Length: 526
Image (cartoon, rainbow, N blue to C red; front, side):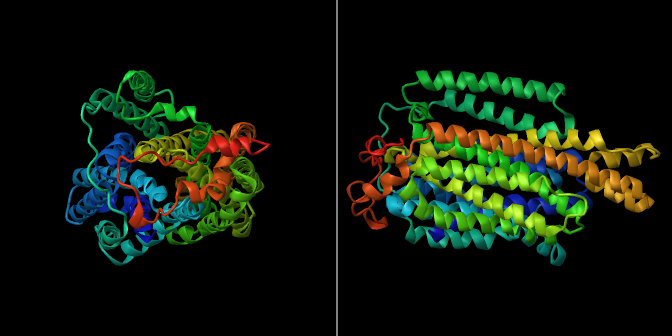
């Protein structure tokens, strides 16, 4: 498990470390705001788009082989990033990091059911999810410390020892792939891959542009409408193709479809939460980046507690009961957050972040385990890639849509009367800009207006996320199968007998799928 944890941890740490480095890159490399946007956006574009065909490639050529390749690409790009001296080169490095991450993330998930028995999968998914989430608060902490003591290239240098450790642990500990699967007569669907990659690229690009250009921008509208056309064409192509890169028939399986939907919803809500909370902690409570990272830890604590208890609850009550409860708890945590006022301290924030973390863990761990348990062993890579792609799109849309809600709420309440044009523009750009302007002008009225306006926008985000998770909880309770958790306890011996890392069947063997239908039939509430 340590090999998979290190593999996924390096991705999430790198994804958040870069955020605290943007001001330094702007100062030392002269990066413009557009270039700064592409330092982050270029990574997301490649990461989101490249994941789609990775699963099929992993199923054909070996999960371990491609996971190792992803780590090598990630480490090489990090080494190059230490030595570049231009903004364009940094953007290129970030794009290659996104390619490495696209190989690592879905394939590390696909290997979980290969290594662990159904009884152990729930715990393994919890640990894997906690490792992925740990980068959210620890990235800014590590990045802030590095930038305080070393040069800006240290944010790339940090990746190298983690990658080396991941490779050193993975090579001897992860099970061998065995011989490459024969694919006689199964050509790679280049047209489908092209449609899927360009469609996802257009969608992610459009959502990245929304915060800057707005929903009415011709560039945003063209990108989003183009993405819809391309994705529809991709779906049509995959349904007709004899050997598609994505098996759309997976959605006919209720465990896969409803488990995927639950993970997408919680990622959508979580990204909106993580978009707004750091701004609140910095602009309204006055913490620096380092202090903000520490104060996000209750979210991870709640997740880890939920991951521990879900291992016991799902086999007993079934995912159909546990996942909706998790969604309700996540929504409840966000509703508690709406009570935050101008005079509220960090204690209230820590409380509702802990509640939200619990809900996130109880929803995402069982639903992810359900998805993986529903996959045929020979198609685990395709299924996990599709799941990770959907989650990535959900996260991107969460930031774009909920970020727009925040902006609308903030601008609707902000008063910039009496300010000059430049100061008014800075105040309207963000609450952090407004606080800086108010501080330089000693304008208490602006400070109060900005804080009140931001709290209003934050409340709108939290209410929107809470309503969405509550609706999803009802739908999950009605339609999600409950057999995933029970199958792991009832059929572990028959389905995974002797399935240790040393005894994993070679690639291309018969599917090792948990018999969900039989377990559902035995469950009166299924």
